Length: 452
Image (cartoon, rainbow, N blue to C red):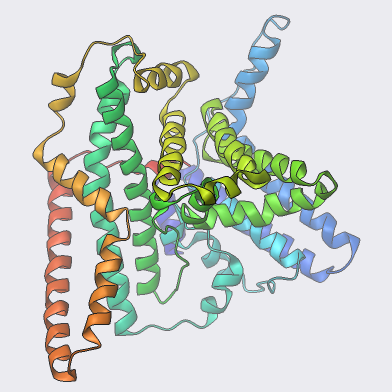
């Protein structure tokens, strides 16, 4: 109930659509389970998926569809499609995907149907994961709905994870986001090589620390309440292929796309061999692009990701394995960073001009003086921390120390561990204090993935 109240705070539409979605999918799950192994079960699954997609289309994609219909038929139809303004329901993409995966898992008998509507409602609407994921499968959460463990150790681990995520979001992501917003607000004709790269590097770090920070907070909050959520990020910017990148970036979404879209498509097209896999990847990531937003720039971003995934699937991955690792990292970063330009831009024209500026073909004058105003000492310090933090530097330090501590006597080891624990507590307090100060003193606090 508190999760529904939390969502309803964003508007009446949120309070109406989510409960309706819960009831529809609860009943659909019961019908699919009751008719398991029959054609009726498949029919109820299809109906359930159509209803879920229909709700998503009505509230998220109706204007996108109408605008494209108008652009196609405007020369022959006098009156454009007129649609009544509808408020975009918060988190609709996430809870729709949760519900679809639940129905499919019930149909595949990968999960047992939930007969308690209160527990099913908690699964769909649990507030830590509701707004921006992770996309937790019902099978991962089913046992915890009725039997979860609450203890001091788990609470402390969850609180620490939450604080780390808060620091990522408020201190790092917001610092980079402020600069990225200023750069992307500039007319594209004014962009130079320096300003364009300053903007996209800032955005590349913003989107990572914004989303991974929120995922950390969601995982931490869930742990405080006794739930264990799967990890959602695993140092994606150290990847040596686009395939590896999508195994590390937004893991819950990429695995959802793999299991519920790519695998069924690849099975249907298996007679085409590698071409079938490539086509399935392209379709999957077009859907991924559209899921992020009703804009053709998202579709092109998805096509870009799908193209390189398809290229690697038909043999390029073997070439990458033979190359020097730094070349592979550079290849991934170029694709990812150029892709973020499409992801961030509102129009093709802006993205095209921005990419031209990044390649040195921009028409703008040198904006060093303008950009340097925003590249403060604070920004530079955050940049250093963010770059190091996006690698495995800190985990390697911890692992090295743990191996070293095995050589020490138990007494010495205990003394050192006590000191480290004290330092961790001071560090958490410092992050929490700095984050609170940032929130109090700044009105700038965007959450990128809230709009998805």
